[in-house]
Amino acid sequence: MNILAYPAYQAITELMRPWRDAAAIARATIAANPTLAESPHGRYIDACCELVQMAGLSHHRPPFGIDTVRSGGEPVAVTEEIVCNTPFGALLHFRKAGGPQQPRVLIVAPMSGHFATLLRGTVRTMLADHDVYITDWHNPRDIPLSAGSFGFGDYVGHVIGFLQQLGPDAHLVAICQPTVAALAAVALMAEDGDPAQPASMTLMAGPIDCRVNPTKVNALANSRPIEWFERNLISVVPAGFVGAQRRVYPGFMQLCAFMSMNLDRHAASFSDLHRERAKGDPTKAEAIRTFYEEYFATTDLTAEFYLETVSTVFQQYALPLGQLHVGGRRVEPRAIRHTALLTIEGEKDDICAVGQTVAAQDLCSSLRPYMKRHHVQTGVGHYGVFNGRKWETQIYPMVRATIHDHEPRERSTAAASQAGGQVVSLRSWIESSKAAAPGQT
Image (cartoon, rainbow, N blue to C red; front, side):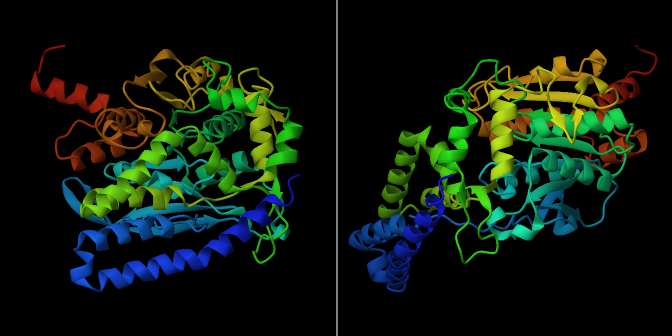
């Protein structure tokens, strides 16, 4: 265990704090002087100070900040509500004011170094036509040792518990890393005949079978034995935090790993930030800054969850080989018979490559063909699968149709009515076609 890594990082962070504070004061001083702020020299100094100010990470969850969404063509107020809470995570509900009942959807967020707010765009899009919940994981450095451990099996247990809170006929959307845990949860619920097993399950850009088309991430996970990862990447939360002495995989290490995959792109982004700020284009500069404020908000992973995930998912390929066990039980995806499956991959995904997620289609062998669908989105990388223009215009309509096709008819009809004539599912399209051409088949 690298016991000094986290304390050393925290010490460096504290040493940098006065410099970042000074940069913030300098920027405020410049902004208070309009003549200086609008001059080329003032803008240049402001841009330099901004880079210094951003040279650090945050370890607190940013707000989702979703106050209103357009639903049924009208703005609707949104409030956040914690449905249930555990020491390690909360089930967060985005409650919309009024309107008909819509499909209940649980978005399963990754526990991979960032907060659930990284899926803000995903949530905002889904809210237009759905009653949205999300797994809001807590930062382990803020969780006392007395709360116990949190491993892969605990993650699966949380997903099952949250689905049970939502009740029958809910829907599950898992993004990236948690696709394995989500599939395991649904399989166990199916085997138990749990009435809360979801009506549909959408798995997006996840490592179901990492033997297929391995990426640099997969190569790294297999380059060392699991003991190496524990010895070099696991540290302890330093004194001064609620979770002091908890063994974790620090979020700053995960962020460094992510950034190292695209160093040139990140360097270019910061260069663009400085250039746009210096030349007085705040729109482009703010867009870059907003992205990195979210990207630099990091959360740790418990050591047991990280090591178990690396070992079972990326090294042993336990799920596709039929060797994944949770709570002493073997996970049997073929037990799933009543949950429709949609798998989605990105053509240019360099984290979970094409072929890794669609493997779930073969594992869920008891599902009838009409309950399974796969889509590869051209022209997008990993994050483009669940965020951005193509997510909104090409991927989301497919997710929405899958969900609405497997809703109870009364809720599906209400949702279609609220959409203002917009086709939201294959079923509604067929029914509208019949109504337009009576007597034809």
